[in-house]
Length: 433
Image (cartoon, rainbow, N blue to C red; front, side, top):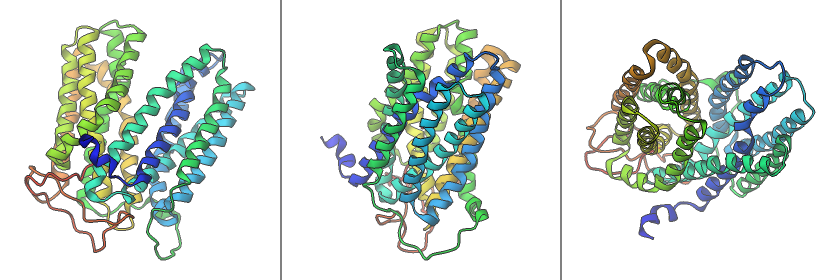
């Protein structure tokens, strides 16, 4: 099909990476979404204690993403991501054992934090591999394909986990299934040779892994991304609270919002890719942020399930336009030898926004109430659009930069320069879940 031509011409290793991400996400999401529910049934376990596990895990994962990107640039992508998956499979098996033997909350919590760290090591390295294996013009398609695999895994995992428990499989036994699934993902990735170009051996200092580049345009991009994810994450908490308190929806109805979100991404990410290709990466960042703002503002008008589901659908459309553009931009702005580090910093600010977003949303909900909050939260989307508008210089908004021509390792053959935005260029230089 002509519609899928750009995806068929991608390096086969990008398809392998997308399948591996689907598998590892499927294994993870088969068990982890149910863990808080499982822990809450233990006598004497407080909600605050359970919540603290996820907070600590999130912070640890943020730091891991930051350091993992730089480590991947120095040590290579392949052995780092394979080692991470092997340890992650063992960690999942240990979690199942801890739950089966009713170990104390501190033991389960420590293993959850370890899982958060291992997940933080996976994401930026996988993004760096995707950038290594795609040229500037292919990166939008490459990252769009990764998102399709990711969302298929997220959609299938919880459904299979719930069905297995209905068929009599215990929750602890699910971990024993998730662990070998993770190993299958490692076997798939083992087929991909090292994607990083050979570099001169240098001594890796711990402090170097957390270096922040003196790159004003990229720092503006990161600031806009942080603001963006403060709004993006409201789908998973504030909207649920609003659904229950203001609209009095059922748990099943709220669940449909998230099912629809995942299914729409799988169904429409390819058309979204062609839209981004037409308008360019830079404009996609701005349009996606403004569309997010408009979608969340429309929640103010919702009076029941169907109007709110329509708002969620628009939120999902904004996600499909924004996410690949962000990932492509974060890797395309990186100088040679720093793709992993830039991917890690992008992951850091994404996780930071998603961690602080619920706290900010909850505080604003208590301050402004059920309806007026949807007139305040969208301002984060407007601020993100302004930040993205200023993050890529120079040039008009009308086009998108092509990243410098790259080889299979994702590096420029000559010293990098900030690509100019040419009106009507229609390039593919655009970037997760």
